[in-house]
Length: 153
Image 1 (cartoon, one colour):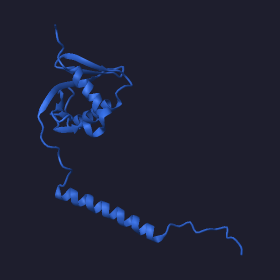
Image 2 (cartoon, one colour; image 1 turned 180 degrees about the vertical axis):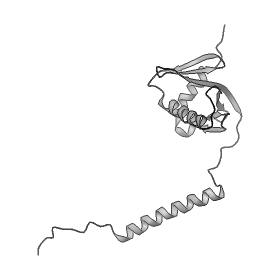
Image 3 (tube, helix red, strand yellow; image 1 turned 90 degrees about the vertical axis):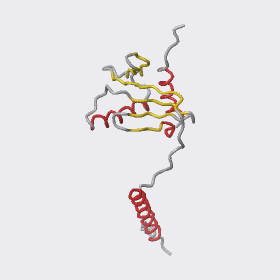
Image 4 (cartoon, rainbow, N blue to C red; image 1 turned 30 degrees about the vertical axis):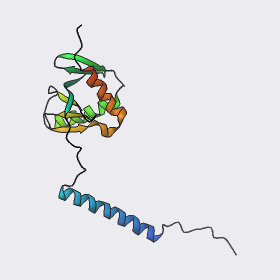
C-alpha cells in the first residue's frame, strides 16, 4: 500500500450547507427585527439623582477641557481617557453632520438605579454608559463628580 501525497483538503459539504443556513437565518432575523421595529427591552424608568450640563473643548496640545457653565471642572490630559475621547468623537462627528457647533452642552446623568447616561440635546442622541462596563462608565462618573459645585467653607 502506498501513501498518497495529495490529500483532499475541501470542507465537508454538510458543514458548508450548515454555515450557509446559519448566515441566511441570521440575516432573516435581523431583517424581521428591522421591519417590525423589535429592539432590546428598555430599562425601567428611573429618577435622576444627579445631572450636569457639560461642554467639552479640545486644546491644541491634545488635552480636553471640561466646562460646566463657564467654570473649568476638569482637564483630560493628552493620551488619557481613551473611552471618553472615543465617545466624544462620535458625538462630535454626529454634530458636524447636522451642522451643530460644539458650544451646546452635553448632559451627563446619574440615575437612581445606578446607571449613567450621556445625552446630546442638540441631536437627540442618548448613550447608556453602563453597557460599556464599569471601568468605562467610571471614567464618566469621575467627570460627574468633578463637576459638582465646590464647597466654599
